[in-house]
Image (cartoon, rainbow, N blue to C red):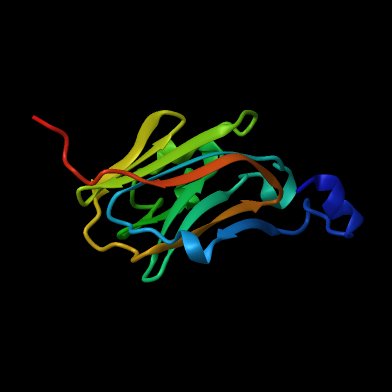
Length: 166
């Protein structure tokens, strides 16, 4: 979604905190949350006025919950909140690895396997932890941008749940 499109709709992003979202929910592609990998490349394309922090979220939607992966520019990570089996507040948890430079594409990877979750941001582990209480069957995803944004690619696939060989 472009800034020009929103301007044509008489929406001033420098004054309004507007969230734009992309959804992918497919009834026939439901998968277990026990062992999966999600990869996405995205960019928040607006960073002025009320949207200077370029808040963005990748939300994996489940039948019994969700995983929320937040992003912003580096100076705004204290305002982020993340959900990955449990809620983590950026005011009391170090979410600094979720701060990105949106002048380039950001790559996010989320892997759940053997009751562990690993989230990588630009090929660096941003979060790793237990994933005991899942979200049920994965039914889709929502990609959200405060302001405007773009998604270059998105992939969600089932992976082997077997632990690695010793």
